[in-house]
Amino acid sequence: MKIATFNINGIKARITALSDWLRETSPDVALLQEIKSVDDGFPVSHFNDLGYNVETHGQKGFNGVAILSRLPLEDVTRGLPDPDGGEPDEQARWIEATVVGERAIRLCGLYLPNGNPVPGPKYDYKLAWMKRLHHRVQTLLALEDPAVICGDYNIIPQLEDAARPDSWREDALFRPESRAAFRKVVNLGLTDAFRAIHPHMPPAPPPGHYSFWDYQAGAWTRNNGIRIDHLLLTPQAADLLTDAQIDSEFRGRDKPSDHVPVWINLAA
DNA sequence: ATGCCGGGTGGAACCCGA
Image (cartoon, rainbow, N blue to C red; front, side):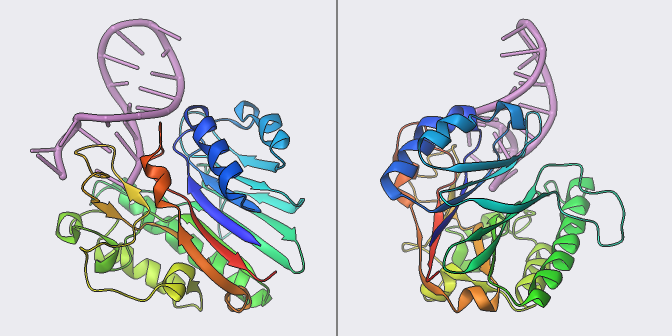
């Protein structure tokens, strides 16, 4: 089963690029971030025509996540729960569903807060969100089932994941507290699918493996990228992992997102 | 990278992203 994550940066602006990518690469599941649409505004029938079931968790203007799947999606839940029983996250950044192929796989799609500027309330929100994520991952791991927790994490895990790490030193994507919170989640027992397939490298260049290039300052042309879109696997999912790749080429297409798809293949 | 680009809303100019 081929499962992809893709921050599309607006469904209205990306409907052609997204459809081209789906037709050319045929993922079984695509977890989307930044749909920037309310649920009623998402072109569901268009993607039904391309062979995908659609579940969305949107809001007006910003954020928003969705799942496209060739197989039916079951037990869909929306919003990252508060472990203390408080209010659910008011921003549309989390969606879960189960897809049943040869195995049942729990899919979690996330759009983790950016967190800039540092310090400030947005950074506090990012770190608080990651605490909630830590709790949710603990619960998922206790189930001992295959689960994929993927999306735009807005975290540069290591030096090797940025072409120019020095320029990110004080950024919320690379601050020590952000990276520590990410490590704390991974160290619960998750596997970074891309790094499990591709060996670690010295700090780039050349050439690096990235999933985001800014629209500005010729970042794509200069390959000034960062790897912030991740697929993390529970042990039961990691045992099924056979491949992980980045569809970098789509950053050079017409009207691209600033992110590109990252995908895995599971023997399931 | 200081938002230089790009998408959103709303109907101009401003918010937001990483």
